[in-house]
Amino acid sequence: MPTSSTRPPSFLLYPESKPSKTEKHLLSFALSVKMSYHKELVVAKKAASLAAQLCQRVQKVLLQSDVQSKSDKTPVTVADYGSQALVSFVLGIELSSEPLSLVAEEDSTDLCNDGARDMLERITKLVNETITSDGSYGIPTLSTVDVLEAIDSGKSEGGSVGRHWVLDPIDGTKGGDQYAIALALLDEGKVVLGVLACPNLPLASICCDHQKSSNNEVGCLFYAEVGAGTYMQPLNGSSPVKVQVTTIENSEEASFFESYEKAHSQHDLSSSIAKKLGVKAPPVRIDSQVKYGALSRGDGAIYMRFPRKGYCEKIWDHAAGFIVVTEAGGVVSDVAGNPLDFSKGKHLDLYIGIIATNQKLMPKLLKAVKESLEEQSSAL
Image (tube, rainbow, N blue to C red; front, side, top):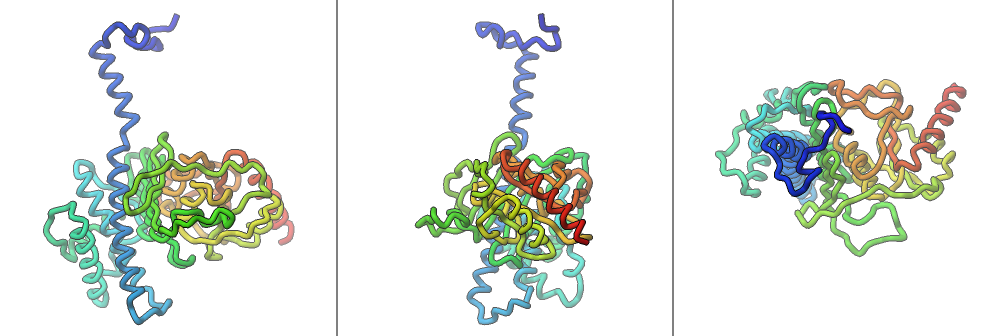
């Protein structure tokens, strides 16, 4: 017989009986735990979507401009700061009953210099225009001081205690035209939800040439909540669809993603691993967590990232993408097979690099990585 501590509630054993007050409380608590991140997920989607709109405004102005110098990073910088200020603002307004702890990439130090006044005013104008066009918040116009404070709310160190939002306001500006607004929530050091807003990512697959779609629409929003799966919807707000990583088991049929920027990945090492796996398709090189989103919906089968020695991974570069892939049925680990640990502060303490794929391919991938690393070491 089960003990009193393990016995199921009486109304489950005997459906005709009514639950007691205590049992009602326990059931309510269980349901609340299961749904505990729904509100936060809705807010995160809102924040990331608005930030994407802000970035698209900057992109539109840039495309219309006569000046198209790639060396001019001002528009990207304006969008970066504006995105962080806007996400911080939305989280603060929508979740005002909770203290906001935000771990983010930017701070306002450079914007406080005398020479940055014009840029700060551009950022403030952009944030106000985006809030006004959305129409959800009937608030006074934000001042430059308000924007600086919003940006600096991202100074949290994170850690294993409490809840911490993790944000990369614009992840990826060098690997072609793909970038993402990446927002995640940590609870006691665990990633419990993540959102990737990818303004330039096509809704159709970016890898499968033989499955080319007539749908040329771009702009994807990926989101995941722990235990609830991963979904993708157009940034315009249309109905979401549940996504899954590819079920490919034969590594020869796989395609793989890697970072565009060489500082973020050793392309020669990735090539060696792909050769051992028998991969025939050329690598798809994209910077930003867009790769995680594409992987989660099965565009490719493998993601490999091997930064140059001395490079330290930041949690905002992986937190949202991590849960988007894992909730889609994938596995993300360091090259020794250890799960990523987001509880140590702003940086990830991991072995050499990061790999991601489906459950079936991971053992083969780990073996190929180990062999390639051994060969690389012996050649030194």
